[in-house]
Image (cartoon, rainbow, N blue to C red; front, side):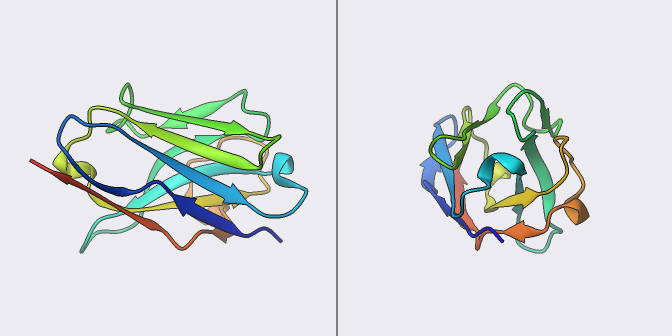
Length: 124
């Protein structure tokens, strides 16, 4: 089992940057592929980005491609989401998640472990 804790959220103006971190417990972090999802009020939780267990493969939602970058440091049991050029529509609770799948899967149901989420608010 793995426990996930997000950090780095907050409130920023449009055009600003934020970096989210997801710290994982346990000694098997490098065995998991990881992902970021987000949920805005009144909407379903949606895929944002994913990274394979080795970091060699990534996937992004079209809405964040070119603005967000996912990465991981297996020596620190931590995953990151660098968010640049933030827009008001990026406002949501962001969740990190872990999956036993080897690929950088984009499907929410493939992820077994979830963090509690962290708020990101982007004002116009």
